[in-house]
Image 1 (cartoon, rainbow, N blue to C red):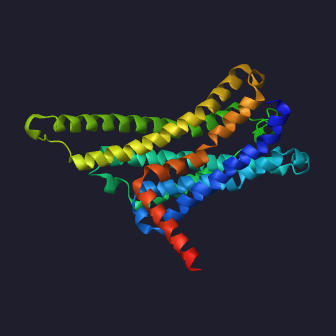
Image 2 (image 1 turned 135 degrees about the vertical axis):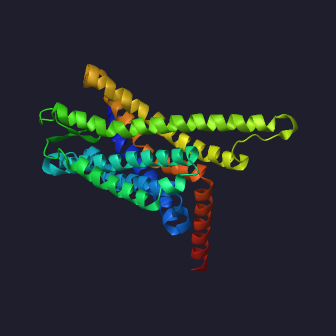
Image 3 (image 1 turned 30 degrees about the horizontal axis):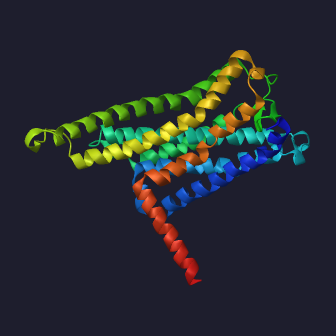
Amino acid sequence: MDALHFKDIKPLMISVVIALNVILNSLVIAVIARYPQLREDRTNLFMFSLTLSDLASGLTAMPMSVVLCSSSFRHIPHSLRFLPAINLICLKWFSFSSLYSLCWVTLCKMVAILKPLHYERLITHTRCCILIAGTWIFGCVFAMSGNHLRVKWNRSACISVVSHKSGFSVAHRTIFVVVMAVPLVIIAYATTRMFCAIVRTHLQITAQVHSIGGHHGPTADPSLAVQSIRSGRNVLLICLAVLVLTVPMILYGVAVAMWGINVMSPSYGFLAYWLSLCNTFDNSLLYLILFRSIRRKTADMLNELVKSCRLR
């Protein structure tokens, strides 16, 4: 595929990401909002925040990228100079909210698995709401910080970037890296603890099943252990999918930082960046598939919708 032809299909590829984002995230938001019993699970509260931030990105920053990337609107970045800045603010805000919401999902599930007897006391509904509100407020502050800096449009990757001549100091870069690295470290720690706990519990159940005379040792109830394994496994799969889709972008960022932007193909930069943004719908897709309660309620909601349409 030649460079000219690839350039022409970039808006189409972004539009596909937007369509999947809007459909899947809207479905998850609708089912959690419709059934109050789902919101009793603390994990679902954080997933609601996660899908809401992903949907907000799909309705704001991504459509701007389609317009700014299209050859039909080549003059817009020059005539409307504030648009790339708004695009960058939306990307930073909703990426921050999405990443930290996933961080809280992972921590919440880790506490449920490792401290089941203290879970209700430690992870209360009020604390969850405070964490969610704080995530969105600090995300907005983080996105607006440095908005006085000069922003330019990167047409090859279809994103807004900060100009090197804008005075983006080492302090700003350090703050950005720390803010975005903290949730990644927490997610890595929580997933490691969950993985070890799941493997240990699985080995205990296997030992009980194969023990002579079916003797059960002083371990947890097998049904509860199996439920913890299933729930923790689902969160691990979501985190693994996030990692797989983000690795190409990480490699691209490291290569550019070490050897300069010309070391990587612009087409690879575009694909790596927008592959990472597939996380904005991939989380909801896996959530609908893996979590049994969400899957059942979604089926019920869609059946009710079909019946109401037939009655009309």
